[in-house]
Length: 429
Image 1 (spheres, one colour):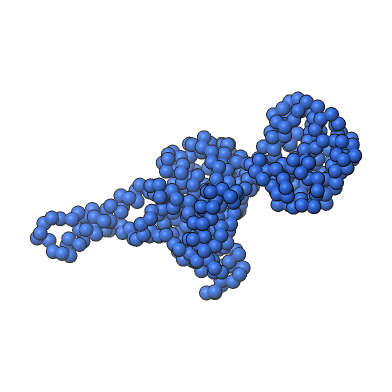
Image 2 (tube, helix red, strand yellow):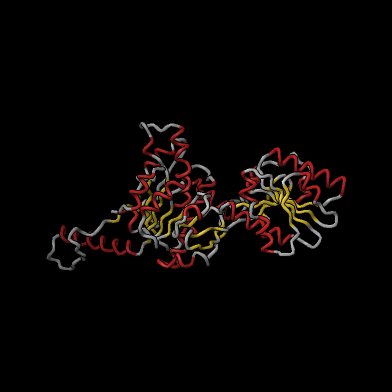
C-alpha cells in the first residue's frame, strides 16, 4: 500500500519529531491529490463494475473497489521510483523528547529532503509522476550495506544518497544494480577516491575548482603579463595549486607563469609593463593579510598592476578591512551561490516558508536543485535518462550541473561559477 501524502510540517523547534512523521521508507507522490492507493486483491483479480442489476449493493461496491485498485496499480506502473537515503539518525534519539543535539544532527537530512520534496512537487504540477521513498541511512555502514540489498531499493530508478563518504562506500559495495545511478549529493570527496562507475558526484571537487580557475586565468592573460602562483605549501595551497601551472599552460602555451613560495620571491618576479596575475591557494588569514599588504605597497609605491585570484573558501572570508581590495578584481570560484533577488529564489523561499514554517537553508536549495534536474531528466527521457547526463546542463537556485564521465570514477560535476569582490561583497561574475 502506497500512501500519497503532502506533509505539512511545522518546524518551530522540534524538527526530529516531525522527521519521525516521515515514517521513513515513506512513499510519496508528486500529485496534488491526497489519499490512499489500494493494491489489487491477493488473488490478482481486476474487478469491474457490473451493470447487472442482480448484484447486491455490497457486490457492486466490491467491484468498484477492485476497479479503483486496478486503476491505481496502472498509475503506479507509470511512476518512476526515487529512493532518498539521508542520515536522519532517528535511531539515536534516546527518549520521546528530542534534544537540541538531536535536532542539529538531523537538520541537514531534513532540510535536503524538504527541498527535494518541493522540487518533485513542482515537476508533479507539470504532469510528472514519481514515487519517493525516504529512508534513514543512520550514518551507519552496516545499515547502508543492508539497505543496498533491500526491497525498498530494488526497484528504484534513481538513488539519491547516502551522504557521508563512509556510507557511500558501504552502500555501493553491496549494491549490485550498477546500471542505476547513485547520487552523492553533498560529499566533496574526489570521485577518483570512490572509484564507483555509477556514482554521480554533485559537489565539484577542489581539483575541478583549480582546473576551471586555471582556464580562466589563462584567458585573462595578455602579452607582457605574468602569472605568479603563490604556493606556500600548506594543505589548502597544495590541494588547489599543485597542478595549476601545468593546467594553465595546457590552455595557453604562451603563458608566462612561475610558481613562487614566498613574498620575497613573488616581488622578484613582478613585471611593470603588464598585469601581475597573482593566484593564491592558502586560506590562512595571516598569510592573506601579508600578501595584500605587500600588493598595496607594490601598487602604490612602484606602480605595479595586479589581478588577484583566491581559493574557493575565500568566499567565506571578510575583506571589509582592506581598503584597496577593489583594485585587484579579486576573483574566486564557487559551486554554491544563491541570488536572493532572483524571482525563482523568492518564489521558492515563499513556498518553502509557507509549507514548513521556516526559511530554507543551503541544503534545502541543494535538495530542490537535485530534484528539478534529475526528476526532469527522468520525466523527459524515462529509463534512458542516464545517457543524457553529460549532455544536459542545469543552472539552479544554488547549484550548477555540468557533468563529465569517467568509466572508473563515475560522473563528476564541473558546474562552477565565478565571483568577483566589489563593494564589500562577492557578486556573480
